[in-house]
Structures are given as C-alpha cells and as structure tokens.
Image (tube, rainbow, N blue to C red):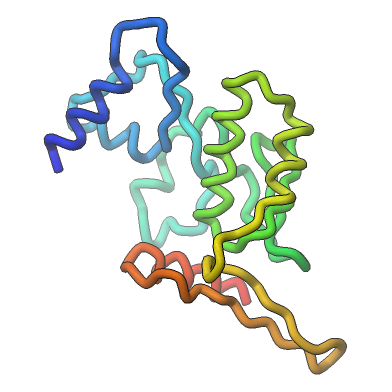
Length: 171
C-alpha cells in the first residue's frame, strides 16, 4: 500500500505545468500525514465539508475544508438527493448516498478545471444515469401505499455495504 501511495503522491507533486491535479481531500491528508505530499502542492481537493459522521470518523470532523465541498447534508428528493456545493450551488442528483454527493464534487472539480460552466455541469449532474444496481431508488404505488425500494444489487464490498447502510439511515 505504501508503494501505491508513493506513486500517487508522485503524480501530485510532479514539477511541471501539467494538468490540474484533483484529489479527494481525505486522500490528500493521508498523503500529507505520510510525508508524501505538502499543503503547498498544486492540487484541488474535493469532498465533504460537513459531516454527521463525527461519531464514526472523528478525524474527518476536524479536517480542513476541501476546495470544492458538499456544504449541506444531502436531503432525499423524489429523484434521488439534493445538496449544496460551496454554500452556493444547489445540486439535484438522481443517485443516493453521501458518497455520490462527494463524487459529484469530483466531477465539478474536473469540469471547472476544463472551463465548463457551472450551469452546464449542474445540468449534467441532474441527468446522470446511475449504473444498474447502484443505489437506484425505485418507487411503487402512490399515496399512503407508496413503497421505495433501493436497488443496490451491483456490488457488495465492505465500502459499498457501509455506504448503503448510511443511506438507509435517512429513510
């Protein structure tokens, strides 16, 4: 694992005028704690600014704010979830889970680094088609007989199972 971390750090700290380097804030902090990256490295970080996970992940509760961040807890919506990025941009994402909100900040970071407008990026996020079996809400019935089923049958590794259980806490 340390060899992989060293290789990833080399990509971030390459001394050239290459493309913008974008990395999840927690991963960047890990590289910094291992002495493999410095705060002065030319990177853009993304991630979650607020966290209700302080009980689960106390070190993340005190992390510096990412450059591009989910700044409001995702709220369930008819099509998936709604959240705010950088206290300015309301994003409606047709996927569930805090992890997918964070993934959306990664997409925004890439788009902004390429000069794509915020309006176009947010429209694109609203039109995302989740991969089959990846946290897809399916709704049946109407009125008092309404039922929501979350199809998360694609994968069952420990990280995806934890993410699915966190989503269920919101229901």
